[in-house]
Amino acid sequence: MIRFGPENLRIPEFQKPVYVVAGGMTDFRKKYPEKNTSEMCMEALRMAVEENDLKVSPEEFRRKVNWCVYSQFADHFGDQLLAAAKIHDYLGFDPLGNIEVKTGGATGGSSVLSACQAVASGYASCVPVVGWERMDEVSTRVGNSYIASAACKDFESELGWMYAAYYALMAQRYQYENNVPHETLAKIAVKNREYACYSPYSQNPGHYTVDDILKNEIVSDPLTFLECCVMSTGAAVLILCDEKTAYELSDNPVQITACCGGTHTLRTADRRDMPILLLPNETPDTYKDFKTGNRTDWPGFSSFLAARMAAYLAYNMAGIKDPVEELDLLETHDAFTISDIQTYEDIGLRPYGQGKDFVESGDCYMEGRLPTNPSGGLIGSMHAVGATGIFQLIEVLWQIQGKWDKFHADPERWLRYGKKKPEQFRSLQIPDAKRGLAISHAGTGSHVTCTILERA
Image (cartoon, rainbow, N blue to C red):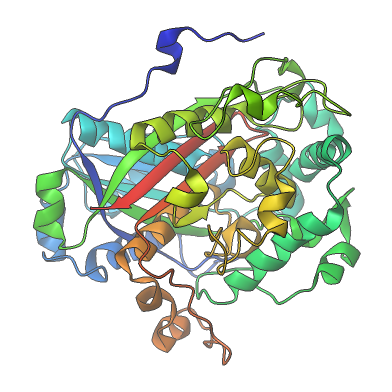
């Protein structure tokens, strides 16, 4: 049983404020043969520097950069070790220092955390975080096996070398413990794929009904194809700065008030019972009846301690007391519908065992109290793994800056990617958004980061 000491739960502090000034991305596709990886990263960087209303020229921006962080999940896909060295050179940042980060599906979020640490410590004042994944040079079957290697190869891999199988077992256990109907999970897929319809960057948008989701082809029981994230190719860039540099570059920077990480065992069977780590909006009475019915332990096989740890640190760092009331939008790592509803509980949107109410109450919709995954998420828009956590934060950034329409509603932007803006287009700009949160998640919950952006 894990028992924390006082220093284990020390709340992080930034010695200097950290800001985000711009973000850029490619669109995301199953295959992108016409562009190599360096070109995709350059496209994302150019959008960040040239299309985000920065007050300097691209050359002036380049002269301000003094550290770079690169984010790629797996060398296997592009068959290139030290790929960051090629990207760094192509983007024109040699001989500045850089680091490449790899923490599975949380690689994007971990890369932003690394950049935050560089800026907050004073080591750097302007840091581009560049993420990508080249998932189109291998077959889907081989790609699935590569990704599945991010679980324990001694145990989980025996389930079939496919992440859907790992999460299907979680789904079965979660539904057994909490009496959650499959229809609730299906509503998450319906929502996220619909929101993806209004993004020119999205890979798998679509208008579906709950019945469509439930009757779709089963990937691994109970999860259907439409409840699973996409495998993508694409790139994303986020630019972090200290306060002085942020205001030299932008009239509208957004502050990172928290960026925190948590971890848990790679092998899910090693997750032993422990006291529930309470978030600011919870008390011991919240869970006095937790171990009743089919629930016997925590976190067990149906919760993510890594997400709970990251949220605990981030909420306390940013001064969040009630996330549903104090956040304006949320981007979760919805690799599967089941991981989404698990995360609702892990980050305290509802107490453990009651996550379905966040969906059924309507809180997670654009019309609700905390719109969740207006980007379309991983299910509807993208999961180019090294870019994913960065993509999420870019979407949060544009919402807080009031620029969602600029980057989603312009018909010319759709044409840039060979698409036509839908006739029934819907703006998903959240009115007067001030604060947003993004969860970046790896494996079956081995690494999680929680990042909070707030209007400066």
